[in-house]
Length: 602
Image (cartoon, rainbow, N blue to C red):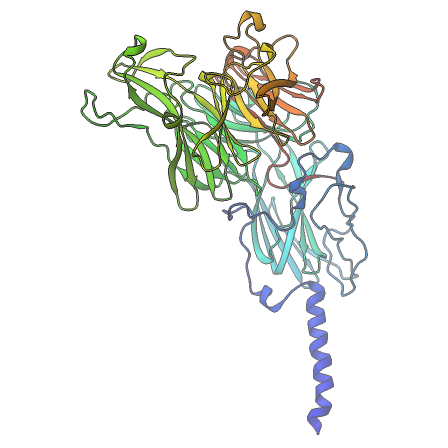
């Protein structure tokens, strides 16, 4: 009968142990586990479970999240749950940020070299180091070590740059590595690591410091001006100098807060032959873009390459040519992947690639051995590391339909060559149709889902739509997008615009398509005053607040101008940049965050 008296004692003892473990947020399984780095290569679109703020494209200054009130440098958890929760502004989703629990136990801090810290709070130990990247002055790597399995987040900043908070990782472990981004050059920063248990309590925290470095010369030489402020927190640009290709991002005050140099930097390459284009951001904040020289990239915000598609030359099947077989035409700066891409789904990327084919143009008084450059759509399967053609302009359009037709001699044999379509943007429409902008045809086409037919043509040869007002037509356009209401947004470069329609000028243009009357009518435009003519490049983006980001990026439009215009066509923000070494800038992009971080008040 003694065993019956033992059961209540054993049950009470086990329950007490389990309760104590739960209070610190540790499970027996979790204690033995290690987590992966939150910025390491991750599954595509695998957004952290606590990064709800990433869905907010714009966080106005007046609705910033508020940091939890924390007093001691390091504190241990108590067994009593706290009713204290952080104050967050309305309509700004933020990661769960519980208050730090207090206790009468005195934490101890171990002295460590500069950039490292170790703190002990009760049974918890937190060690961390912060190291500036050797190859990037604006990225700091933080290593975190707990003695028990916890989740974490980091707050970092200073009085000059403001404060930011990383998202919760959403995993429990003892060892973590992360990269802090969105930093300004040559500044001292403070950061705090918060350890979070399984019942959303911040049970330990510790503070450290680091200093960022100076900007590289190519970035330090950039000169900015701005009027007003953008509603987006981050604007990203591409740029090319005689020696480098790079991406960089600025904050709302034109401070450079991020950069990355492409693989063609430092190589001996002719101007305009290098360049980073088609920048898109995944839901997990990875950047997907292409290089004229090196192919396609899928990388994390700290520069870790996740997937890569090597550049390949365009192969020309030339059965009746003098060479007697196939040859490779890679003389064109656009050979292979070029201009633009779109994230098709979680594992596939659709991109533009140029293809040249032989064409007998004697019927048009042209050469019999002409090479005609068209475009095809390629689908990159990033997981299987394969790519294939899904659509080709030669199958659905005819070189007999031409607008800008200029024959030049290309290649070692100086063979006559014509750039026929010159596609410069690809995007997904409202019905999963694909919009392609063919600049040299003054035309936007819609390709049906499945890539088997052209649904309609807007502008150019064989247009399915007429323009009741001739001034609504566009010329040599870039960046064609279909908005949620079916309207089409384009950057109208205006090359060769007839004098009767106003001559050559550039603008942002939104057209309403009437599929019953088959007419296209202007419903919105932004045109700078005075005019800022951009004969090539440039882009346009509609923001979620209804404003529009417009980049006038051609070299003949120096300095490079980016404007945010509201729905009345008025300027909200006007920004220019220039450098004595700047060769080319193509597009400007608005992003809500670089790696899920959000601004906070402290």
